[in-house]
Image (cartoon, rainbow, N blue to C red; front, side, top):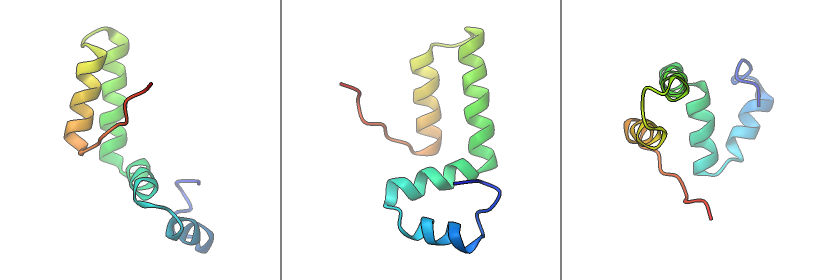
Length: 71
C-alpha cells in the first residue's frame, strides 16, 4: 500500500479491512518519527556502534512494539 496515497478511497478501504497488528504496521510506516528512529537504529547497527539486539530492543521499547520469537 503506497504511503503517499493514504487518503485515497482505495487505501481507506484496505485500511478498514486490516486487523490491529496490520493497522499498527501501516500507522508506523507513515509515522515520520518512527521511520527516522528506525533508520537511525539501522545505521547504528551497520556502523557497529551498538549491539544489534540491544538496538532493536530499544527501538521496540520506544515504540511499544512486541515481536514474536522466531523458531
